[in-house]
Image 1: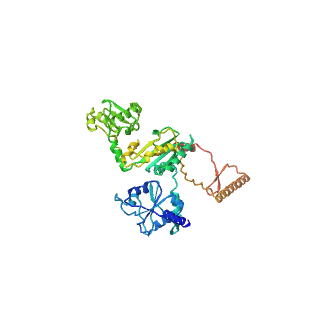
Image 2 (image 1 turned 180 degrees about the vertical axis):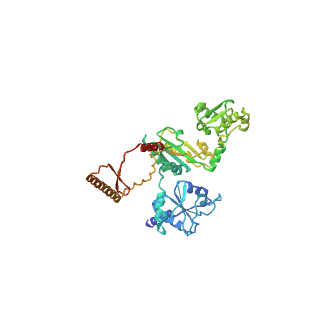
Image 3 (image 1 turned 90 degrees about the horizontal axis):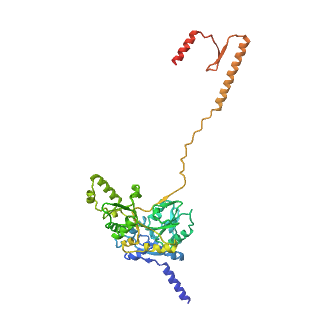
Length: 475
């Protein structure tokens, strides 16, 4: 019994430490490892590291937590795939710049990246020593279930959501409703759907560019998808097929149904969609309002650009002949769509309802046109987050004013002493004049040198008065 138990333990240990050998010819297994969502760590065996990476990964997976969090595999990363590219080229990863360095690729949540040196080695100043314990901690952390991410600006929204293949935006306003139930539902979906990036948008920080098109509920969910090249081509091809309209030849009508409700539809469905949101000519007041409308004239559906050109040519030529000949039909599918989106309009906002609704969007389909049957709305631009910050801009600091120079204490004392001296001399002069009995009226003038002089004043005569009058007239 003891021998059997020991043998079973050895077999289990050997199996736990073994790496899955990936082949470039096995497309399905490679696709699952690279983009399946589960955690995989792949050691490249052809980077001239003397199998340091593979041996390190095997030792790291001896840890039970690391083995249960992430799977290990080995691959010749420089060997070409059936597409003609190498796995490194397919993932956009550069080979090691220095020989002897291992290359470990972490694939999780639908994304792949090379591990940094400090994620598998003990780094001290200028030296680095590979350590299986460091790598084990990295694998445990990478294998944790993803959580929703809160975004408060457009840069973070673009990086965390709009630039991802699959994204779920849960928007709410924490100032007007209790958001605990919404955040719990988002967390449950994020933990289950590893290929889906879940972000939370609080209305007190801003709103989405498609906010007007979303349901007016306490919380809304918007699925956004970044289309690949094949899906863009498929959407372009099918949206270019515009059915014939059932309109009046001499009447121009408009509808707010959107181009996606007309392009790629049969004639009856397009007609019903157009009629369901038919609007009058006074319901739009600017070019910005009219640019998003679909127009109908006779048997043609037209865009705003086509209508504007047609009306301009009618004013120039006086008839519709030139317009009908040059623009019999302007396609609504001329726009290149880069993203697709659809809003959740279910009855209950919980994790079960959201997960069931998201299932078809995340399922893998061989046909790139299959996503068109999901009812996604094609978007020519990505969804944006418009922040509404209540913070006032920080005022620019005013330049520091230089204080006025203070008068020197020494100069003030000297001026006060001079005034005292002049007053003393004037007092002495008056005492001398009073003692001599002088009967002349004297005026004391103080010169620039500080000396006081007495000036006799004579009686004014008529000649002096005439000269003073001349001076007044000259001034």
